Image (cartoon, rainbow, N blue to C red; front, side, top):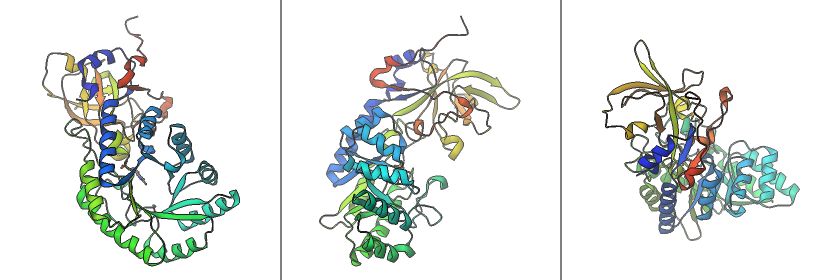
Length: 404
Ligand SMILES: Cc1ncc(COP(=O)(O)O)c(C=O)c1O
């Protein structure tokens, strides 16, 4: 059971200032443990996609378990180093790296996933000026549809990511002329929240096999084959399968990618590692009876977790306080909304919940990935703090203003 649902914890949360991010560290450990053991079994090198959640404590744990870090900004590279990832386990990816970021990452000893010929040219020139050799993999756009939301699909020709087929020959030529680049391999990432894992990754692997063969025939040794991240999680039923189906993912790619001796296979999961261990805990500020709807107005908003407003993403919502009361049916229908001055600040429309009242604690589940890391101070709201299951009692307690 997710620690957040433990009745003793809920009683404690009643005293804590909301909103806050609750992280179930046992679930994180169980998830990472599973990843490490499957990675060993299938011979896969795993880098965690830092963008999903860059909380220091989470990164420190993940680095201590030997995973590498997939970073997409200069600051993420530096942060990963500060959280214990060795430089040779840090990869700097991203479609738009600034000169400063490239220089910092070169000096830090990170390797690169480059996304355009122009970028490779610049990385080579800057490495030459710094007297450093850059380890570079090249991201390819494989033209594969990940069957996911159009905002998180990245591997079709409509997307800005990677190098297209028509640039393959010029790429071979360019790499031959880059004296400060050690070419390490090819990188692919077709999208996020992929649920048709076998189908999508089988397609990806077929494409990747033929692309790798194409480059090797032209004399480029592809030592690393990196298939990116993308494994989906169950947002509807976070407690049904709290650890995502890494078995199917690892098994599919390991079975379908042709690997010759000396070639390594890499994956970069983000969401599937951290989504289910995180919950955004909020409180009902007001219950508003509208003309046609009843609203629960929470103290957490789209600035905390933007996924519903940005992608129309679904998050399960639970009334935690109602678990402490005699069982009431989930028979009330509410539009659950946030306090931000935007009509898109909606957690869920027409949600069935038990009768809910001002002050009730509400859990917005599966919020560990692309939640806290994407939060902002829009409306000048405070950033919600993190509370960890390992030392909850460090949480900031709430002040009672109403009954002073
Ligand atoms: C290149 C790359 N690798 C890995 C990831 C992580 O994906 P996910 O969180 O779906 O596992 C992303 C996410 O956008 C990405 O762009």
